[in-house]
Length: 300
Image (tube, rainbow, N blue to C red; front, side):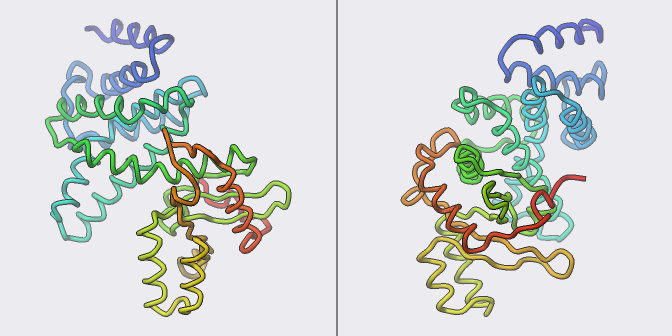
């Protein structure tokens, strides 16, 4: 296929077809730009440059093109993320630099996963996990590299579904919600949620039941909270702590997101958001801050 023919075919499919078909063609288009006639032969060691190019395309995309481009970015990140997950699971690479690099690749992948889901309408979220997994299998096969097992990928999706559901549920209930940057995520902030009526906001770190319980126990063991505060935190399902130091110090509300209390999650959304709204109002009443800290964490 000539460069001109490839371009023409890509534009045609971008205007029609499903968002996933358009994502594949967006991915192939950036690969062709990078590798020319060798565009169909991926190499994991040279994906970094292509990923950065795709990120630029995402930034420049209009609303109609953005979902396909974010999914294309996710597909390109899959080989590195799958390799990183495999290394983590097998406890390979205990060196700090190696482990930090693999961890960054997983965080980068997770960020894009969340972005991709949030960029889609409800009708496309239903088959997101299965469809993207199938497409990632093909990308990893082309790159001749390891692919997530379906269990690994489902675990990633399940873990991220909580923060996505909180984000969408808060929006549904009329709160202003802002997903934070990777810098803020490093300080334990998943998102910021503001109550329009009062202008007060909180930084939230969504936790599973087990992760929340472990974190509270660790905080008590380290002497950062009292035994009474730990007991109250386990009863209420949330507690505010301080993360970071100096100029990077930030107050974060650890929030236990459990389906027994908040409700079930289906296709990345809570089936009922009323209890979530009550919890958010309760947390903002207890810990909400006013001022210009909202939207503090944005990408440069």
